[in-house]
Length: 180
Length: 362
Image (tube, rainbow over all chains, first blue to last red; front, side, top):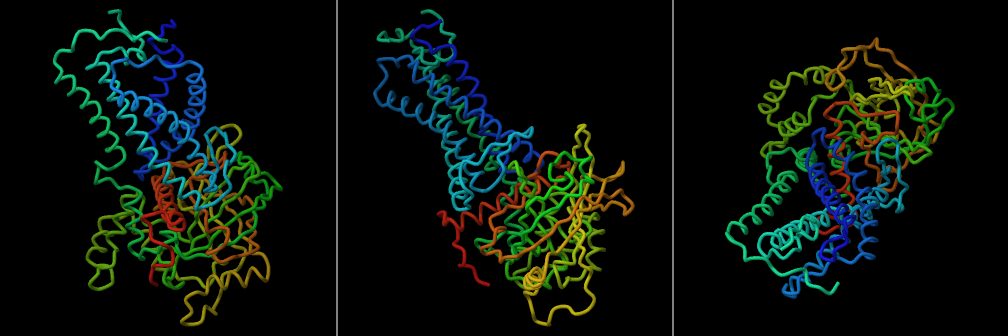
């Protein structure tokens, strides 16, 4: 299947897999810093390896996206909506790469061992520096909130395309497009 | 790639309902996130609330730890004798292994200017730096048991012992009500009645209090607690001069100038039935104990610029071969230490909205 009005099947698989992972990640992150219960520990144990997995998949996805352009948006979409669509997509790409890097960097700056479970250990990517830790830790929080807001806009817009405009944009990612 | 994505199909019916569905999906997701993040769950005991409660009892001191604020950095090494290697795969227990250690002696409480004699408890935190980049961090206290077994009870303890603004002292009725409703505190209260502020950090036995598991090469786990038992003999008379409030750091500095100080890492193994998830219950004295090696401290530095300053002694940072138990205090320590660490580092970094260090009054 390589119709120009749907995303490549590989891109669709990556999209839905990563959507699930990123949503999980955002909820795990928000939950683990707001509880003193034992779930703090196992949420943290999920957060780090999941974040690195998202980082690796995001790089693969970015590479694929740059070599396999997305289907064009409908010609009758208002310009501001097209601009918003492009900007929010690139923002999502930027965040799915930046957030894991910032998390990795902040643990490095805080001189924490970057453990992924099962004895896996990542090397530090920044020298130990508590001031850098503090700035990155705050950035990690606020960019995560921005990520969630961008996700809400993305989901709302996708549903608007699917339910109101019914212009095939949502189907270009679900792949379930029925012939008109 | 030049074709349109197809003509729009029939105009949608029930548009209002469709918009409502979209709104519901977005608002529902936002509400779920708000709940998980705690904004829509005001009653939840968050790390932030617990740290506020602890810090309130000793005043907010920007740039300092929110608990165990007064302390001194030490450094040295841990020399393993190999006796524990059969019980844990952690490489630092292999015979003849010497692991560098960055440590910190401290007083409990959030006031960095507290008098050394104001509490009968001293603490020792250690970070073992393993050659492969792994770390073992532990925060130990020189006491027999912890007063409470859950973070909720610890929070209630802080609230019950807050100084009354009118008298400057905790309200005795509230304090009594707390201890009456928390009978697990009886063992701590009995111990603390006999405890006296020691004249030296060097003569104390520091205990993990919480239980952990060791994991051996066969994959079996062993519930343990540990104690750092000093080689230095307990002091007789000759305590600090009256009126001296900062004798501990001076004492440890003087002793370390004269030569290294040594403790033995005594690993205590639980017997079946021993409480592994309750820090208010000590294990009987006859439990199997393995001397795992010697902690040798060789130098000390003030905490303001010493190597321990920027270390969060989170006791859940463990190398392979050591694991957390189900003790609920461990996760709470991890979560609250992270909150405290972010507060003091962002104060040092002058992150907007934080107090600058040095602005607080003594």
